[in-house]
Amino acid sequence: MGGAKIAAITASVLAMAPLDSVPRSAGVAARPSAEIDFDAGVEYPAGNYPCSVVVGRLNADPIPDLAVADYGSNKVSVLLGKGDGTFGARHEFSAPLLPYTLVIGDLNQDGREDLAVASEGAGTVSVLLGEGDGTFGGRVDLEGEGGAYSIAIGDLNGDGIPDLVTANLNLNRVSVLLGRGEGSFQVASTCPTAHGPRSVTIANLNADQAPDLAVACFNSNCVSVLLGNGDGTFRRRKDYSTGISPYSVSAGFLDVDRRPDLAVTNLVSNTISVLLGNENGSFRGKREIVTGRQPYALAVVDLNADGRADLASSDLASSTCSVLLGKGDGGFRGAIPLAVGRNPQSVAAADLNLDGWPDLVTANTASNTVTVLLNRGGFRPR
Image (tube, rainbow, N blue to C red; front, side, top):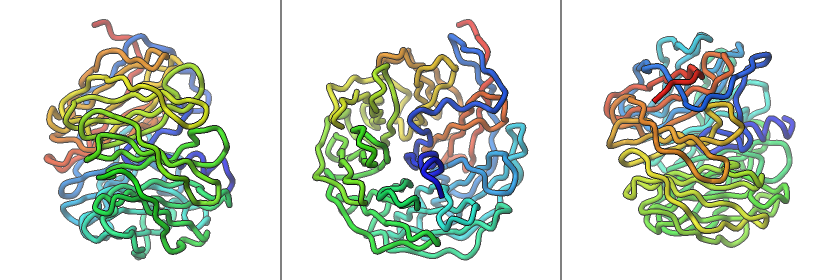
C-alpha cells in the first residue's frame, strides 16, 4: 500500500476528514455558497444503540458505503450505497461486547477494505477482513489493553502498512498496534495520556513527516498531544486546555497558515474548542465556538466549497447536527442546526451521492438509525 492511501485513511474514528479534505467528484465543479443548504435528511435502520458511523467503499463499486458500530446489539451494520445518496438494507456482522467505534482501511493489503472495531466492553480491537463484496470474514480479536474506547488508523512507523491506535478510557493511555501487513498486528505498546481519554486522532502536527497523536481527555478538560518519532513510538505528552468534558478531537487547517489545528467537542460546555497550531506541534490559546447541546463528535470538512474548513458536530441532547461555517482565520459563524434522529453520537462527512458536495451522516443512539443529510450546495437566504 502506498503512502497516499495511508494518508487518505489517517483520520479520527468519530471525525472522518483528512487535513486538506475538500471532497469533490472528478469533473464536478462545486460553486462556493455563502450559506449551506442540506435536504431534510433520511433515516435508515441500524442496530441497537449505534454509537459510531464511518464511510468507505466496502464492495467493488466506487460508491460510498456505511459501517456502523451497534453498541447495544454487539454487531456491525453495513449499508451499501446506491450512488444517489440512498442506501440498501443493512447487513449485520459479529462484533465483540459493546463495540463503540470503528475504522475502515485495507489492513491486509489485498485491495479490499477491512474494519477494525474498538470494544469498550471486551477491551479489545477486532479485525474483520473484507471480502470485497460488502461482506466480512470471521473476526479476529486483538488485545486492546483494556477499555478500548476510540480507534484511529494510519501509518505510524513509515513502512506503508496501516497501524492502529486506541484510546483506553479506564487506563489513561493510548495503545499502539503496529500492522504486519497481512491483517495481524504486533503486541500493543502504550503511552500515558491525561485522565479519561475518550477520542484519539492521527495527524502530522509539527511538519516533520512523522504522524502525531491528539487525545481528548474527558476528565482532565484537556487534549494530550504526543509527537511521533516516526517509528511508532511517541514522546512524552503535552496537555492543552479545552472546555469542560472534551469528548472528540479532530485535526484540520482551520486558518490560513497551513499549520494543523485542533477542534475538540466539549460535552458539558456545549462548545467546540479551537486550538490553533504552531509549526513545532504546540498550540496557542483556545477559542470556544457554541454548538447544540452536548456535542459528542465532529467532522472537519469544507462544506460550502469556499476553500475554508467548516465544522459539523453531532449534538446528543438537542438531536441536531450543527454546521459551523469557517471564516478562514480560526473563527466560525453561528451554528446552523440540522434535525437528525434522536441522540446522535457520531458524525461523518463524505460525498455520498457523487455530486461534488460533501454530505453528512449521523449515528443516532436513541432512534437506532443513521440519518443521511445530502448537501444541496446552493445558496439559501436566511
